Length: 257
Length: 316
Figure (cartoon, chains in turn cyan, purple):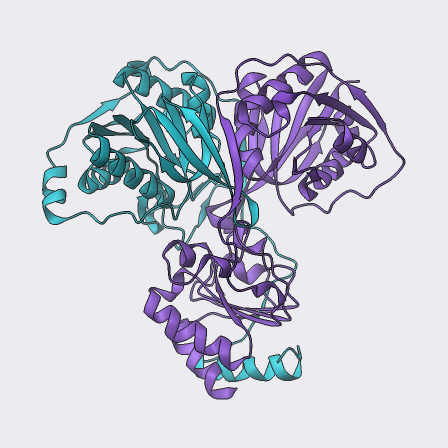
């Protein structure tokens, strides 16, 4: 099977997000990593490759710093990849990014399956993968929590629904699946894996290389710190002291214990 | 007048609350955009359409075997048919499991821009401005759509459901369907059986901040037992197998409303908050002062939970 995983590098969500000029965050305060949901997609791809043979190709749009995390996926076992380094792509909206990813997947050719994480942790839009499927003219399934296939062509999938329900459905590849967390246990790169990753092929492409001509269909206006009208009463003091005060409040103020 | 169209969501003949929330959004913003609020219902018959008509003046009903069960292809084709034949300018979709599955595809089918997972929609000077969470809710952004038509998916629970009013009209709309490439076999319960945490008066819930299965067991379970309550967890805890799936709180797990919900090492992602925000008293312990859980908690302690929990235990 030839499997493409669309991967995004995102900030660690525990970072401090300081806004600059109402329109971006100060990256000097931020550590970057693979989007957690994409780790599950990479693992799902590697498991299919181990079962049925073939290769796993990473496609990612992002600044130069994203190369580190493409190689992280290589260290897990992915074979090679395409890095779309054009800011006119990764700074645009999901529609433009989806166009670039779809063009890259077309250039790779003969792809049996496209996997993405369910959403990116940073923007949580959950639109790009579905758009890629539409542009490639292939069926898709989102929130996939189980993949069954004997031949890499016919798939039985579990799609997660509300309240612990799963929809079981069938589709024929090539297809796009967005992978939900918990489907598997993503492997950690091994030392030999990390060594091999350094030598694996990474093609960098611009929008022109891929023939991307789409323009954005949405416009960013500004970003800001949300104001909550129901902010918690923060209990001050050293941990032991705060704990004692909390128990007192729960007993005598909230009267819930 | 062009329409602002809510696409209704239903499963097993039951209309979702998210649909009623969208009816409120549509009625609230349509006038300022010069649009007429309406809803579309895709189903095997018009029973759901008649129900939706209690919440919005105009309902367009597509009844076809192709949309008897939800599929992305079926819903996309139905949206396209209604948008093209009924003078629709904007489409509102719930940002739920089904909504996430087809909203972007429907936007592509009608050549519209999409802003997804939106928690506030307003019309400023006749133009649409959408607010949404970014960076796990630590920040928010506003976005607009640059195409003539637009699709917006709205976060579940961001708006109160519309109240029922005078019955509106239900009009049948015909649509021809092409190939449906996914075939639904069945819907199954994955956490059938197990403990029912939804009745507990006290719930102690752990998140990613518990670090590993042993620490979860050593910290969360004894505290729950001492308080006479149940222990539970957020999605990462269940994904990692630290406790069983029947104890998951959130959109994909249980919705709980105990007197006391103690959130330990839980950041407060929207999907988790959806399952516990109705709790009477919420306590959050997290070392990240900007964790969004503090925006909804009653009491908060910004500290290492491994230092705070022994202190709570000692005072009980």
